[in-house]
Amino acid sequence: MTPKQQRFSEEYLIDLNATQAAIRAGYSAKTAQEQGARLLLNVIVQRAIAESIKARSERTQVDQDRVLKELARVAFFDPRKLFSEDGNLKALRELDDDTAAAIMGVDTIAIGNDKVGVGELKKIKLADKVQALGMCMRHLGMFTDKLSVNITDGLAERLDRAMQRHG
Image 1 (cartoon, rainbow, N blue to C red):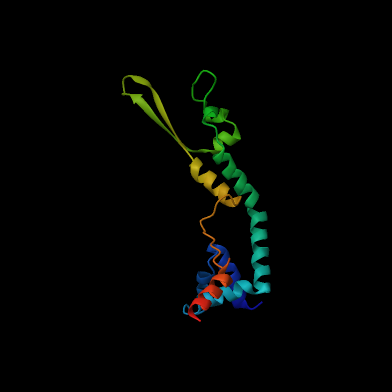
Image 2: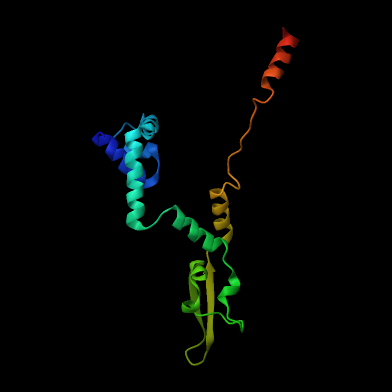
């Protein structure tokens, strides 16, 4: 592997953008898109990128399974688990791990004034359940943002008919 290819493989891991990685690796901005695409097809570069991704996953303990599990925790969060049997909000330390994972933050506001404290108001900000479900669905292939259209079905017959009419 050349030093420039090595640099490309390192830069590619930053944002998974082949064009920008090629530019940062020192390739011409004019040809960066083509160079990036060509480099991603290079078996040696592919192997270096795959090894780097694997090493990073091992080092950080973050991989696709862990990310998907965390998404599932948010997607399938049950807000009833925030409350005790008597309807009061549980303390954070009393929440199970799945419930706690769905909480993005807690704001506590004191009610009353300097002389008389009446209580406190707690606002719980939850992660976006709909977004998490959507990301899980995309991962599972339940829907995509791409439209696949097959215009070749029957195309030969239609062309033959058109040729006969005009021929």
